[in-house]
Length: 448
Figure 1: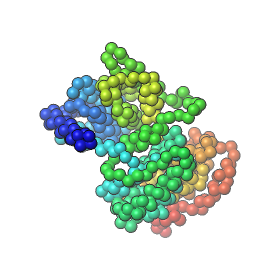
Figure 2: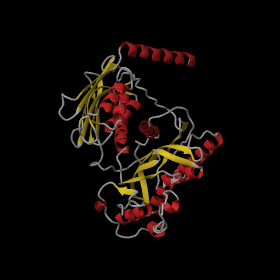
Figure 3: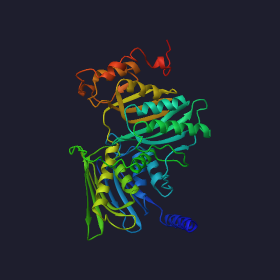
Figure 4: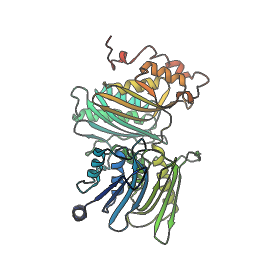
């Protein structure tokens, strides 16, 4: 049976390639018909997941999708996107327009490497680690300390937390060689220690760090990790804030044998990618869609069927679709104060910074760590570990410790509500790093 299934998959893949060669994608980029957006139309032979691949390409270019029209009935796919840059202007840069054309046009492959496993993978110049486990204050600090002790340098990382769960993808290099880590014993030790850290907070929930082959799209994998870990499930009796909760509904359109998904929520970057990613991973196909995100509230409407051709069949399935889409929208909503760190990269930088956060009773709810040409640019969203509002005095103390020109507050720190009294944790640890700076950690050179 396995041999037959394998042969069938090869035949299906070759058939898709044949159809694609006979009907190559067609891309039209129009800067004239809409006064406030660039219009991108993509026509192609249809296949499952093609909508996500197109949205992923546009999202990875940091383009803002303000409107979208989707149609994929039959064997043909047609999509129209109104897009702008981050400043809300049309795309006029010729190099960018040429890249979009090449990425979506007939010479593209719509290459998507969507892995189904979780673990450690070796890329061309770094080793990628995927982790999933229970969230708790100081978790990122502990994971970073483990990697530093193993003489690994974190060059890129993205961390999400949602509904008591934490998922992370970290790209690390060997401290001595600056390349990938290939020693099986060292990789095994890395997995074991990281898994122990993840299991510390909740032994009833699973934690995973498993070796596998392949390359992944970071944000797609984070969605898959959270989804596989069932972060969309709420504890019994949990009361949700209806004001902040996305408005998601699913009803069946009997005449057309579709299920209609409607989403209304506060707009934010990459919202369309997050919802399409979840529908695709749940094995639903979007046949028609209409997206409007020109104002502060985003409206999305999709006509969907399961990949087997059926609409949503039961109330239990309907509730699961709603819960999973709510979770997809909430995962990237950043709770806490946004801090940006910009400095020369050093081995142990992430460990030192997150340790300072932890010792000042701050917990990281989301993080984006990037390194380019020897320079680290890291974004952290932090909140008080005890649940109090973030104390502006603590933030200023942390900035003085790290360096006020190195760590900046993105937002108005004056809007923070000071905690009326010192918490016990802050009393014990607040002065621990008071006299230290990055120079003391050896992470920023002093040229005095």
